[in-house]
Length: 187
Image 1 (cartoon, rainbow, N blue to C red):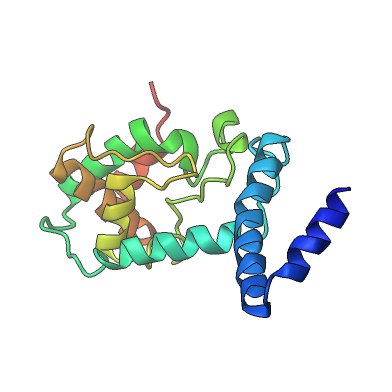
Image 2: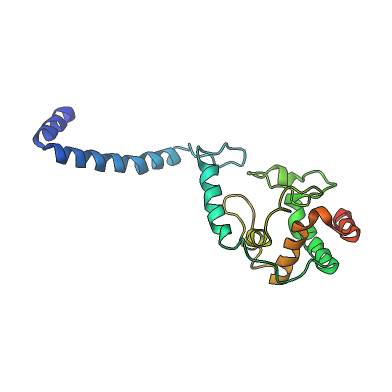
């Protein structure tokens, strides 16, 4: 019955109206299909769920666009031993639980996160040591949506944020006193 009605409706329409109707129906099908996919539980929301096609790509493109606006920003404070030590103390209390240290196994919290938090304090020139100060600062201040990386802009001062950024940027060349601070057990 419905088929007959649709055929008679389509027969009555001229080709331009058929094209327009096809575009409208096609355009409406995309959000409807997405809604049904999400509503039926098809969307991976568990931390162990695999990312959807293009999810990682789209998230990275959006993050790069946001960070690039601040990437050229330079640190208003110098990478002195005192600032690096202050950054190490902040890192130990705020960051180490997820991002770890050079001499510690990942914590249960870090192992349960998706995506996995990258190790930030590395002795080689990998990780964030080759990122600009502005990029590290932006990520620490604002956090990264859909990753578990919180923004510390409300809980740390500008100076504290820059101290952590400098620590991370110079992680491969830290003074021994700062390296010792990072390797001491947390209280």
